[in-house]
Every structure is written in C-alpha cells, then in structure tokens.
Image (cartoon, rainbow, N blue to C red; front, top):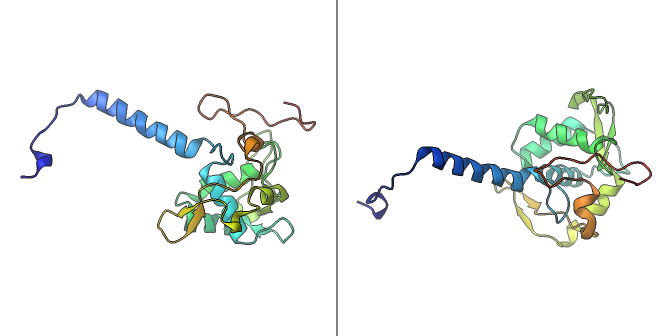
Length: 191
C-alpha cells in the first residue's frame, strides 16, 4: 500500500467547499478578470491583439473580417467560446468603452444605449494605430514568450509597452473592487 493511502484525514465538506471555491474564484479574478499591471491588458485582450499582429492586420492595411480573427484566436491562443472573443473585440472597437480604442472597427459595433453589435461575419477590424505602440518591440524579444494552451504556439506573457508606468490606467480603468470599471475619460481628457 502506498504512503498516500495510509492516512485519511476527515474534513468538514462545507468548509472545504468554501475554501476551494474561494481559492478558485480568486485565481480566476487574478488570472483572467483583472488586467495585468505590466501592460494593462487581460489575457483575452492580449491574445486578440497578438493574433491580429501575427495576421498583419495593421492600421494601415485593409480590414479583415472579425470572424477570421476570432477563428485564429480561438484556434491558436484562447480555447474558449467564440462569443467571448468577439465580445472582447467589440469592446476594444467601441469609442465609449475604452479610453483609447485598440481595434479599428468597420460596421456596427453597438451603441452606448445598449444596442448589440452586428454578428462577427458582418463586421471588419484592424489594429488601431495606438495598438502598435503597445507591441512596438515584440519582435526584439523584450518580453518572455510562453506556450499557448496546447504547446504548439508561443505567445507573449505581456506586451512590451514602452510606457509601462501608465499601462494599467491607459486602456482599462478599474476600481479597487473586483473589476468594476470606471467610465472612460471625457473627450477633453478629464475624468
């Protein structure tokens, strides 16, 4: 008999469930729901921007169908539903959602009044010019690359933002509670 099976420790199932769920919830919040302070991005945002960069979907080139980018992201970097990835793209293309748009969208990306965006097959996107600043030295190995979910691709751990002091506040703004968002800055730059 192995050493692992010799001793059984009784535990209170209610306390164990509370503790385990809280540990899991906190790991999700820290790992996925809050932006990384080093570049100001959540993992899904980083994966979308990186996929668009790899596709050559630059601000000075033709738009590509959103569905094409979503397919690349879920196939290579983000093995979750396509709606989560497309919702992220939509949000990054809405001038009323972010301080600075990271995605330049063409088509219906919803309204501030709550109107939904058109389906991904009807919208087109490319990187916004400011997104290039965020990824400026990516090819110069300025950041670590890590394996994707199945080990077939490498993705940046963070983006090599050249102005990291303000990265966390530049694109996404959060309160101290878990992920509640401040509204975007006013057009005149005031809060």
